[in-house]
Amino acid sequence: MTQAAESPPPRLPARSFAIIFGVSIATALGNTGMQSVLPAIGRSIGFPDYLVAAIFSLSALLWAFSSPVWARLSDQRGRKPLMMIGLAGFMVSMICCGLVVGAGVRHLAPMLVIFLLFLLSRALFGLFGAAANPATQAYVAERTRREERTEAMAGLAGAFGLGTIIGPAVAPLFVLPVVGLAGPMFAFAIIAAIMMVVVARYLPEDRGAPTPPNDAEEADDPERPVGKPPSLFRDPRLTPFLVYGFLIAACQTAQGQTLGFLIIDKLHMSPLRAQGFTAVAMMAGAVAGLLAQWGLIRMFRMTPRDLLRWGAGIAALANVIVAFSPSYSAVVMGYALSSLGYGFCRPGFTAGASLAVSQRDQARAAGAIAAVNGVNVVVAPLFVLLYGASHPAPFLVNAAILACLLVLALRSGVLSRAGDAPTTENDAALSSLERNQEGVSV
Picture 1 (cartoon, helix red, strand yellow):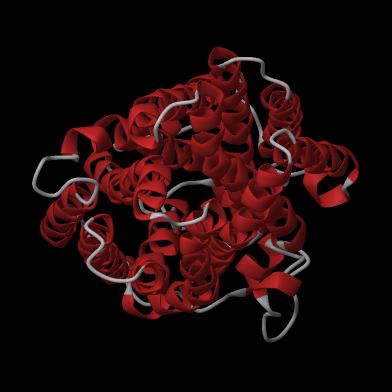
Picture 2 (cartoon, rainbow, N blue to C red):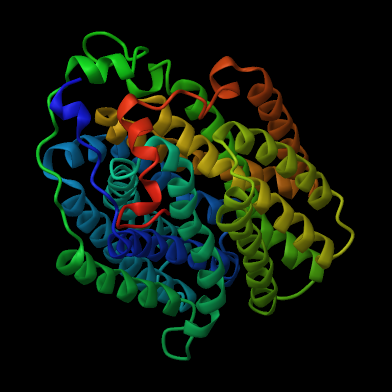
């Protein structure tokens, strides 16, 4: 074995992981906090419900197309600069969205003009904010060994869950007399600015130029296509995880974007009064997701294969509960249970994709996962339209999709052995030293 193959991956110090976690949580709490007030914003301005969901669509398309490009650039320029670009894009987008919302609720421009400006302001996040996601995932993946990878990805996914708790909880606090419903967006922009300073000053970027491939690395990844790598979405190692991830993300996004409207209609309240109830439901879901990612996955030492199966099954059952929920409390219970399922699914397909490829392809895998996590939002307006026709319909469609994914996870050859690939000789030798190394098992 060559010297390059014998060198262990650099360890992930606790402070570095905390900073990476902070980058993820800053964007997560901003996005979910904005999502929690969006139904109130839309109905205050006068947008039809499906246009409220469509605000995320252009941003999602740009996110999907730009994520692989940012992933390649992170290989060339390093992970840290790309995180800075992502945070800057998020900050500018939030400021612009806040200004547009402020103008919209005061009816300073025609509704169509406000909608287009809101669409373009949000699109800035999809174009530039997408730079951070593949960079953070690749940063963690290349600093953890294979046997640590699932817990590492679950810990990083916990940032999304924690952001889903904090975002809806604090968003109403920033709806202040002067700025009104635009206040949360300005507050989240300030948080992003603070994280930019933290990343710039304290996150080490000790990764040099990518190591040239060697025979030992190729032997560790015998399924890697020979020659020029195929398109991310035609790579046989990744395709099953990308299909699964896209459909899971689409179901979760559709459920999240219809939740606010469902609660408003269940409680027969004004949008502003129902906002607090929506925030409570979203926080219950986030707590359930964190229970999965920070508790159950570690407690039961779940592999990606386990996560893909249990996650889809639980989320399918939960969507049926939401579809036929007779009361607000039943909606909250069903949403929390579905979030528990999604909390299994996300680290399942993320870690599965990471484990399916060799070390030098981590950024490519991260870019592909980020793309499918973004493009799914384009289907959300269809679910909102479906909700307008029949309130249970979008949740029943979700349940059917998730049931199919459960079958796929049980029968697909790649998904059935997700996470079971043997570790490299080097990782096996290092596993006995796991608890003696300085760093953090995330």
